[in-house]
Image 1 (cartoon, rainbow, N blue to C red):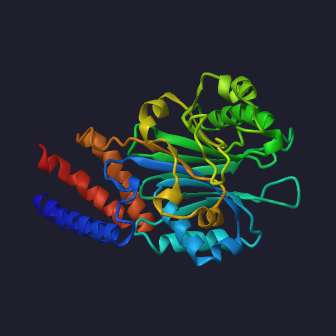
Image 2: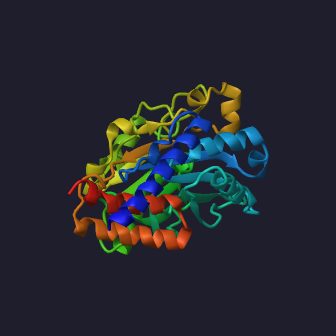
Length: 342
């Protein structure tokens, strides 16, 4: 056992050295989701008219990669590329710059007109296991211009264990009606997951300014139903332009999520300020800022064998599936914990 611990020490030291090198060659900081306590940084980003033209601009692509690699899980909206090339280029470029690789869940092309959009989830399989995903079946009622995309994840390093992310890009002219129907989307997910109530509903809701009045928002089903908690403030500015509108939102459901997220690490990510971009350069990236939330990890809470074994199993599976180096380090830390702190 001590020999295994020694090997693990070497792996951990190597990981720390690599992390330090990576930090010094990027923006000078370690990405918020890269800690080893099991925490998750989750985002939702409407990348305005994302397609071949946008990824063809090197400076725009580089900025998008900087933004996305902050997250352990991120919803991408407004993908408009029938070839599927643009989103794959973005994923490949992102993975070329990180050790902890991302995988993707991609929806079908959605929309009532010839202008179709897709959703994508980029996630780290070293941190999350995608169990299943689906596009909400809206055929009988046709309530949504772009039906929500639901992904169900296993999260062995948080108190939630399992949760869903429900991504949606709401049509501005039908914002109130689509907001109301998100309650039914949530109920449908709870039924499909055999009663799991933990869900993150996120995306561009267009829930402010000329599209949704304060009164209409207050009276909407998603806002008035006490099962849901809106965590992006109504006065948050999520638009890059001079307008001050809180279009992009994150809504939580489920007691485990209520207990796990940190309100003081929730909001919009102002990438123009972070990366010192002028308004024109920022607008080339998107007309929206990402919104994000932080979920606390629980790896530092327990070191009992009963608590560690499921995590070891999960990360062993992750190693065999993706070869993730970080997953190896996770396992070493978990093995070393009881030896260092008996």
